[in-house]
Length: 133
Image 1 (cartoon, one colour):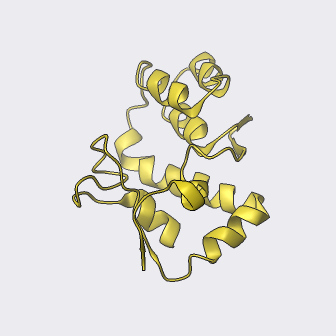
Image 2 (cartoon, rainbow, N blue to C red):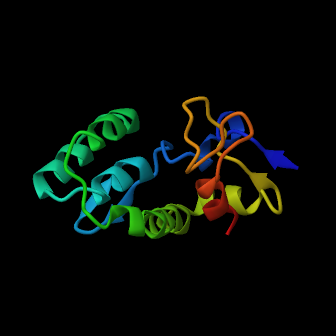
């Protein structure tokens, strides 16, 4: 079986799902908040991302601040670490993830994210691959 979108009963797989994670010295409301802050250089910018009310706002603002020069080299490792923390620290979510068994997990989207997910059956689906690990 394939899970093609992280919504409905599978919304918990989304980085936007409310599950606090620690990265560095701060705790973030979602993996998305933490990921957006992790790519930044300035501590005050990270605090701004941490304090965003929604993960959508964190994502939008995360693209407005200067990004660390090594980001492209480390972003998969950072995402892997954050996703592992989410499912290690939140036992009910870990059980839900394990219950997906051998299902193929696809972060299907309509916003043309071909790196972390897939749109119109095209893309690398790196988030899905991390979750399936």
